[in-house]
Length: 463
Ligand code: UDX
Ligand code: ADP
Image 1 (cartoon, helix red, strand yellow):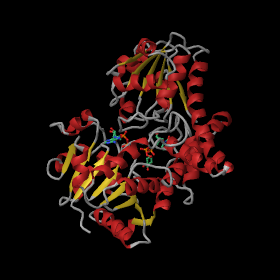
Image 2 (spheres, helix red, strand yellow):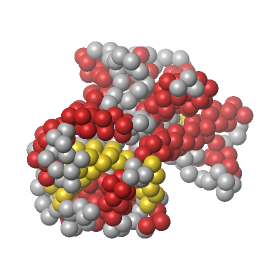
Image 3 (cartoon, protein in one colour):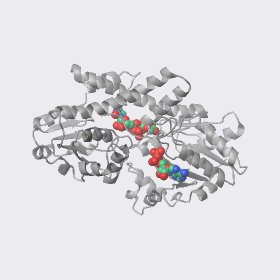
Image 4 (cartoon, protein in one colour):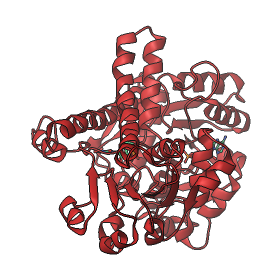
């Protein structure tokens, strides 16, 4: 089966970059990315490719090359679905905020809406691919909806989880460790569908790196990979607290441990806590699934990864309060960084949000600088917590576009994202402009302790 037209529903952090790379690598396939969010689609179509809605190193260039050649962004969802042989579903699957499974299960309403729309619109056979991270057995639900409400056309459901990390999305897509495709490999039709998707990736990914499995293994592998990665971060963060008490240095410990080839060096960087749209959501999902099968020990085991992460964020904020003589009320605290990691403008589940929330509860005045996150987004993140009114957030929080101004007259600075540019600031100038003692809290192990202490900072780093 030769694929000519691909449609992707959802022009977000997953759908946008993935489709841009597929279009660039497969010039003979037309790729249309659709979204109900008109503003987002308009930004993807902005004449100036630097204005696309997602900041990812290298992405603008890929979009520039493929857009209007075989890569299109549109709000006409029905038309793109009807024309496609292959449909990727890349819509958001946030944690449920209501009802059964509240705070744990993934909210599948957007997925279900997509399935119903595909069923309603389709007039020819289609391969439907789950790209969003989903709980195990979602494919079955999709299949049910498609088969029972369709127009007699046939659908093959595949799972093709995305492993890209934000900030390195283009690199991860161009040279993936592996591509995972789950399908109904026991039937001819299923095998054909899997092969069609293998052929798309085979344009640039070596065959031995394309794994095919049954659908359930594929769905569960994605959750497992994210749970393992998050677990490593929580493990090293747990050690960071112990290091602070014992005089060990967490970086030295991580290095020594990571040189064991059985353990490896990656994801052992201690921090103020992991964020991002995946780790917490996927673990909660895993916990929910385990509980629903009565596997309480399994559920408790994974839940602890999140408990540790929450503790790390809180511990960092409380340390600021304690160090500033047990009160930050009315004090100006400068925050450098709001994104959940460097090289992205994504703020979902960013540790900065929770650290701010703790400090605001202590009546601090917060001033924030992030090189890529907008003021609008920062207020939206704080308002979403619902801890205090929007007016209070506006009164207590200021967002500025100049880092030196942010630090001017501050009692303390906290580094919450590891943006490279923070390392190169004129720290003497920053010190001179601050109230003394000038406290500097490094939540990312980013800055050089010795140099900062030589300038005169009271320096605190995790671990
Ligand atoms: C993650 C997975 O890596 C990716 O495969 C999956 O597709 C989506 O979820 P992402 O959330 O984009 O990707 O970023 P990642 O690099 O995994 O970082 C997640 C969080 O962990 C960030 O807040 C990061 O700062 C933190 N982290 C990561 C650490 O604190 N220490 C580390 O050593 C690594
Ligand atoms: P992710 O990180 O998974 O890509 P995002 O929130 O960045 O998540 O992107 C998901 C996108 O999916 C959003 O832009 C949202 O508007 C879009 N979306 C959600 N439901 C639908 C739908 N039924 N049809 C089209 N687009 C949708």
